Length: 136
Length: 379
Image 1 (cartoon, rainbow over the protein chains, first blue to last red):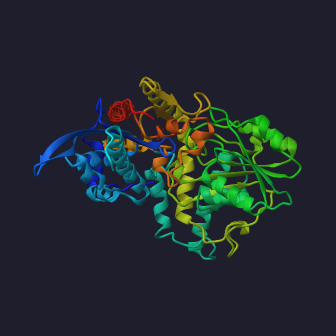
Image 2 (tube, rainbow over the protein chains, first blue to last red; image 1 turned 180 degrees about the vertical axis):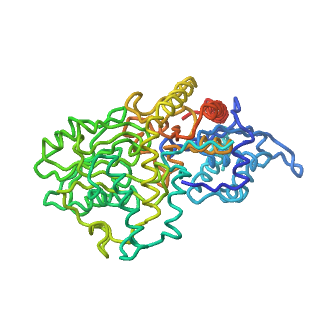
């Protein structure tokens, strides 16, 4: 099957950002399965910064490990860039559409890869919140 | 540097083949069914190609039906058979043009058995024998598998089919022109082959149908090809196919050279930790390599190698329309992850050692790079 990936996808695939694992991560999101072949582990470190006099939690660091196709790797790289530095509230709102948009499109058969990215991020945040007994 | 290692998908049309075809587009453009000289020239060219092909598999020229390629030949062989019997036996690792045709016949009330294969991809002969019944019309088993290159024991299957009095079809798309086939010796009743796998153009193939076997056409019309395949013959394509056969016949002697390159590839790739060879070590066509690397996904590897100018393919789900891993790799017992990590390299006559050395280095680099991205991932 021929795949026409955008330049942005290829660039993120060939030079992925924020690759690796965060030891003692504050939140972890694991998605994917061996049948479809794409597996993504996302790690976040949460920090606090002052915004308008209030201490707000934000994604201080984020890293990923991905076993998957070119699209899955590009999506992983992109989700870390989109989420890094964002407050948790902002990060929770990042959707798969945002990822596809930032990657300048994905072939239709690869849309499901963008869901993996958004799901992993939301799971990592949820993991952090549940560990820290925040009320949601 | 551009290195083509996807010859099981398609091959480059040989320059000699192009040269042979050229006149049949222009000055010798005639319809082989016309009475005049233009027609007679085209007819002669078509019949010469038919003769050459018949010679290759030791059959009569009248037993060769030209088609548009392997898929049509497989369809014609299986759907075209006429008989009271409604049972077909095939294998789990056939090409989709056989498997989907069989599934179609199942919908029409046929019973189809899909024989299992061992971990090397060889069909289970005992199972085949057990499945043959009074109602069995046809056994359809491919000669060489397109993904893993495993060569089936056609002589043995042919013998069994003769013993039990059932028809035997083989999809020889990956072997015709590479491995000598004698349809009389092996007792083959129907054989499919395709031009573009042996340096002829796309859009031409043939079905060998043994004289006494009755089949009905799938394409009706003016009664071309002994009324089995109507439509004006693809004269340039057929001429090219004939020329490619001549060349293949000579090149078959060079296969040791390609085999050495293949063995070097396998040997060096197996040195990469977490590599497995898919298919058989010995019963393998001389130009096929299929390996799986742990911790990587095949499409990513194909994509990365493509960036380096190396053309390969994979059985990973990510590269298929269905998003399912290869049915062949699953049938030989690979896990989903192993199937996803597969890479197929299929060599052609033009590959050389310098290219293969470059490819080995690049695969090592790319596997390394992809493993860094998936390092210690929890599956």
